[in-house]
Image 1 (cartoon, rainbow, N blue to C red):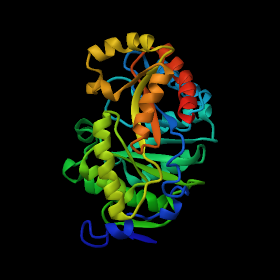
Image 2: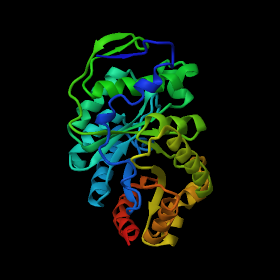
Image 3: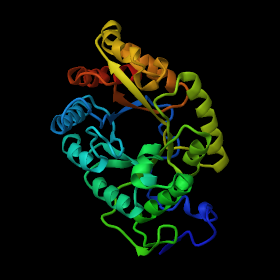
Image 4: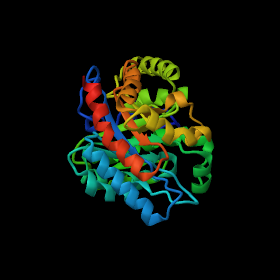
Length: 337
């Protein structure tokens, strides 16, 4: 039985941060470095302009298109208390796996302070039995609206995230867990993932990137990073990895994109989005254009040490998004040259 939080708050972190480490991804640390960058998909879960059934149909079509383009992983997001359609992570991923298959990695974002760790471990264990390996667990803290709606105390969200990772990791490794922090004893879950999982810690702050180096398999870099900002954040992450003696399995970067046949076509499609200040993201951090232009954008981040680009289609019409997925196959070919 694994005993968690039996000492003063925070004092057990050195011992429990790596619980389940043998169950993590079996890739050698840094094994993917130097290889061609891989492209994965992060499907948009919010479809505010259509009803729920149509939004679900669009996500299913995009998952199918991502598979046909040969993308290497499929992930979905996590957000709560939404006034417009937002498709919840575990339910929609279960449906999408029927399109994606079980021969490639898949996973979910979990805003962990909003989740009971036992429930989260059960969801991961179930989904992992239907998905390829490794199963990807992306983490984050959530925004103030998420936390307020779910009754989470923002003052302790960092500690809660650390505790949740340790508990979920141990449960997925098949341990019986006592947690004074969460108030349960001798708890276990089943089914367990049949293969390894990877913890992708999404963060932009120093504290969050330090956590990624300390307890994660990798840092999941946010989509708003320009090249200059990414260079500085990558240097900090590498420093923290060296400090903890824990080289990352990979270093993925989220990116909002639109690929079209030509630069002019892509620019015309995204022009209204840019004029409206698309998501508050600096246009320099967006990848849009022909396959060659997008491949060049990706490669510039690859030169900094990012190993994977996880793409989300910009908020464009469904036909443009599906075409963009199809053209990502050409982008991948260019990255391999």
